[in-house]
Image (cartoon, rainbow, N blue to C red; front, side, top):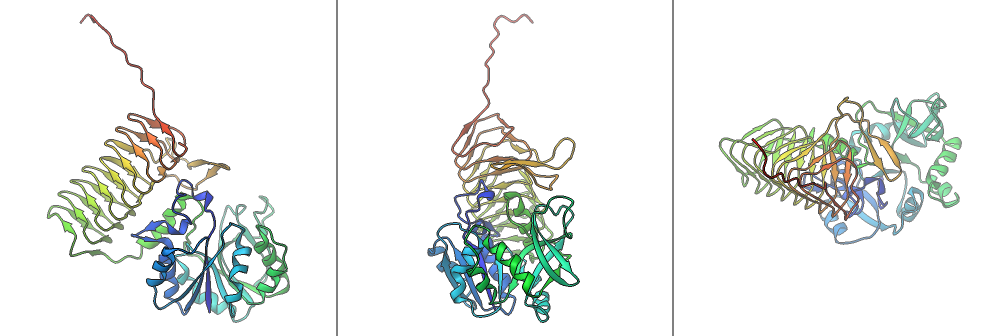
Length: 418
């Protein structure tokens, strides 16, 4: 059995994190997401993995070196031409039945055995989950146990079921012949698959488990929560933990980290290599602080992710995603809930997007500089290399490489009578 990982798209919906390349390269627990996916594959009987990337580079060699028990091949897809094109590029290396999945599926091993079992009585197997708001997904139409049609983003009220595709497929080798004879366009994979199920027996594995998704930056929380729920507590012997610091629950503290006097870490949390946590800081509720970050004294961080090399002087960060090498000056505060406690929507390049979240702070791209006493409103996005001036409230999205600040009016009154 082989697995094909898709890691070559533009990840445009993952803005503002654009400089890292594919979204599966985003760091969680000091490792890229695709590392955790490969580790999940390693827990199964699969020994061969084909990874579609935009370009083979040193990172590919590094990734291979971490998994000597897996035979990993990298195949290039220089331009984003869709899943069908990606699969055709690896087709010559596929020998028999194979799994096809997106590179962020760190939860793959949770479904492997069940899908293999379902394959015994079918040509192929889909993974699906019952979902209430189904109209944004690929939806399955069933006759008995058999899938007879896939309907992409059905109109509200016309959904054939409440089963949405998850993005892990167990496919037969014969599917590639149908794909090769399907006209090449961005959604030719979906077209070929829809035609294939009408002539072949496909079953569905329905899961009640939480599944990870990764389209938008706020989706990263589903991935981090999955990983943090499965960690074993560990404090490196090279970490410097003050006697008055408190570490409670499932927490990992990596090599060279410093936890200063009075600091509290309430798990599940991850503190990466050489991270500095200042005096009396509070780190809690599914926070991931990757390597070489600095968290200043008296700072509170809740359910947030810091990429490597980021520094904050003081303040509160809640339900937020902060990029690499970001500098947050003293008094930085994220508003993470609406006043009416309703669902938070985010303005994207394609319009207003519902998040399904009632707690969401800010998403900040790499290399952003933020001045003193800055506040951000729920669901705002700040692009890479932006500069936010002091005493500013960020009420809307800030484009990359933009200077954004509040204009102050200086008022000087002389000879004021007391």
